[in-house]
Length: 225
Image 1 (cartoon, rainbow, N blue to C red):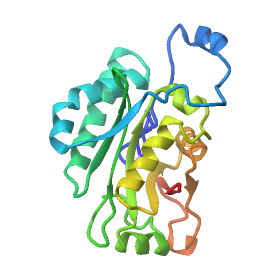
Image 2 (cartoon, rainbow, N blue to C red):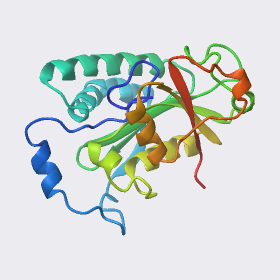
Image 3 (cartoon, one colour):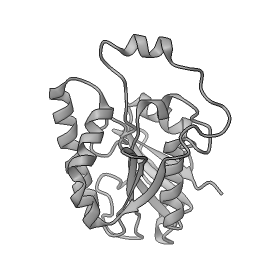
């Protein structure tokens, strides 16, 4: 999945702040809002494949803007993100959601897991028996990326209106999936922590069939009712 420093099969949960203003931002940041959503005006909607193609540059720019780093790092991250997105967009059932007000504020994308065939290169050997059965029944959805500003990762992660939660819930609901699944680099603790704060958990069943070592960890998300 995508969480801004991720590799091909890791999650991109974007938006670390860097640069000279970071300390000032932390010092002056208001206390997190615990009542109604301060971002309820953000509209979440799907894009068609053609609309995704038309807005690729905008999506790439948004990824770069939320990933932090210097301009060279932005360009590197932007290019890698667009290559991953283009590859996933060719998969059957691919879906991309955007959140926007007067400008783009977030996106999430993925595709349904199929019962057979190489539906996601790199997943072979990582799925437990229960997850394979979910895939066979069409009830498993691969969440490839969640791209959101850093405030979404830092604040109100447990609130239903948190933008990352809204995006991931809508992906599963739109496809009738009972579970979401993603792979995260085993060394990427920051991404795992962000996902867990949004309700994801590390898969733990059928561990005898899963590799004890390897580059990735499997995380799953139950659809919120």
